Amino acid sequence: MRNFILSIVAVLAFSLASNAQNRFSIIPSIGVFSSSEADTNPVALGLSLEYDFDCGDNHYFYLGAGMDHISEKNQGVTSNITIFPEVNFGYKYAPVNNLMLGIGLGVAPTKVGVKYQQESYKETQTRVSLDLKAGYQINNKTAIYAQYRGYSESDNKGAAFGIWSLNTAFNVL
Image 1 (cartoon, rainbow, N blue to C red):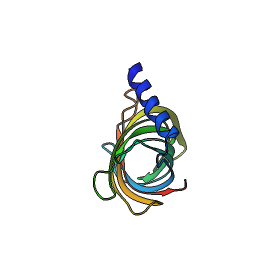
Image 2 (cartoon, rainbow, N blue to C red):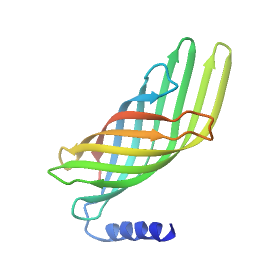
Image 3 (tube, one colour):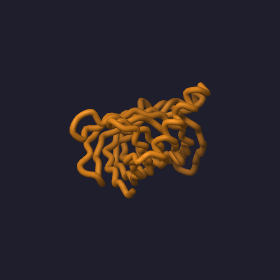
């Protein structure tokens, strides 16, 4: 494991030191929350910052941080889920003409709040996430992609869930 982490650090250091086309992006997203325990599929809103390290030949490693928020009201029960700050890293590949595929892992403190009539419940859970991405680089400054981010259970207290989203990346550097 240590060698794996050191190899990632070496690749990132090389990417920063070279004349690579590294990118910093602001990524707003809108999506749908999906869970086996949810009666509805509420809207999920998100905002992320992501830095892409260009490794050459259309290969990229990325490091990101962001948040997602889901609010649901169903049969008198109000549920709020805030995922912040989520930190993730991963790999992207752009094999053909501006198409992009990606996979990543993350860690996310998840704040869950439920309110029913006069009673309320709040808890923070730490979850692991898996990202799957597919999209299109429109030009040097803008990309659009679909993403599924699946979250693990948290100590058997909360169900696994996922967010299907549409993201637009605005490259600012």
